[in-house]
Image (cartoon, rainbow, N blue to C red; front, top):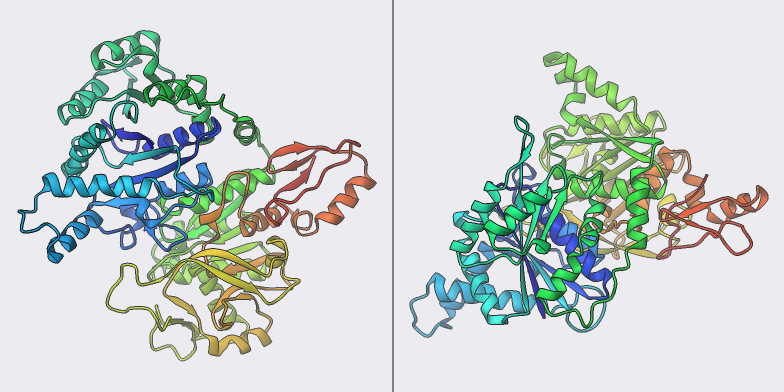
Length: 600
């Protein structure tokens, strides 16, 4: 097993996660199998109880692990399925060590950070690195490890020590350290400054780690004299210093690394030259360039609680992007604070109220993502009502589906008191109730989590067609409230279709309005399985409906017939032009559903 460690210096938020993911993409393109580990030095056992304002979204894995959003980047870039153990936290390590101490596994020893905690970290890395995550048997060739935080943080000290020891444990030729640092440009003089990176490398060395490669973040490519200065003062060969300058979209980062021969440098450090192929990134390059050249906009309103921080909805944004690229449209997201749509805001802040409604009324589609707590709930209900009554394409995810059910019960069934027991426990018409297996006393890891099957029971529904008319789908969940099964019959009689349910038939998974152009809610989180070039079906449906092209996705056979009748045209499958040998469009399926077939 070969290991690539990615650390960061100077400031946080430099893009270590994207860098680690991009290194993985590049190595995978060279024919290597890659896995990933994220180390988060905080004391939380996992990210599940953390506010999105603190740490961005909580990403959910197939096994129910609630993890850092960077693992979402790894999964999207590398098209892999990670486990909860691929996210190491200080809380997990100390919990593991203390459990062993309580069992007496340390044989009366004084349990200390060194060697017991540092050994536990190294053992965890070695154990998880060999778990296959790409659907194939046997361990990967390379494990990319990202150390969260910034060099010098107090909480990361045990991990720095452990990783220093680990580099000796695995030996030369098996460990490569990539240090991501900042080379700022001062506007006053317009000069790239190397001193922050020099100090960062000095601090890293003082902690027992020596960088093999420098990945320098800057607004533009490093000048030759700047690279020479960094090589001299940081003791890193000139050809081992790479620039990661600002790009139009992050899909360019693997291409930047490829152009600077990063794969060759890493192969030298890890002795991989004999098995390394020339990187094959043709599809990746086409997608990145296609994204840059999209001009026809599709406007989507994201009506949520955490709209002040886009990282709170990172996977939602990525899923929207994947779908819009598949539809050859330029994604424009209008962030609408849900609370600004409410009547109280009209009295307290009329300008914010008017601005929010102006945004909502100017979009092509509406998306209400998941969330917790009652702030902004009435605004989300109003957004669902507006989309339903005005035939605007709508997608509700988790809480977004639940508020759509509440709105339908209030407006169509005239149950004006209809609500969720999460927000109004004493409501006379509880549309949404607490799940019986949930815990009311413990928050962490007690929700319905991970990948679970949803079975379609309405065969001609839009959602069923979007998923390729499969009998069921596996999607990831994260919720502790659900649609009240006692109200399902009344809702169905009024016209709300429950297109998919769980294996018991009592838990509602997908809702639809059959007489609406596109009004779908999902209890699960489809955004977590969306990939570049493999857009989530429900997000693809939302974007296609917002563009007026939903029929093209739902009925690929009729789209093919239309192409035959009107002569040869270019057809884009996952953003790539395809033609058959006779000049007619080649309409194909991807993973059981039609993923982005659009002509120009």
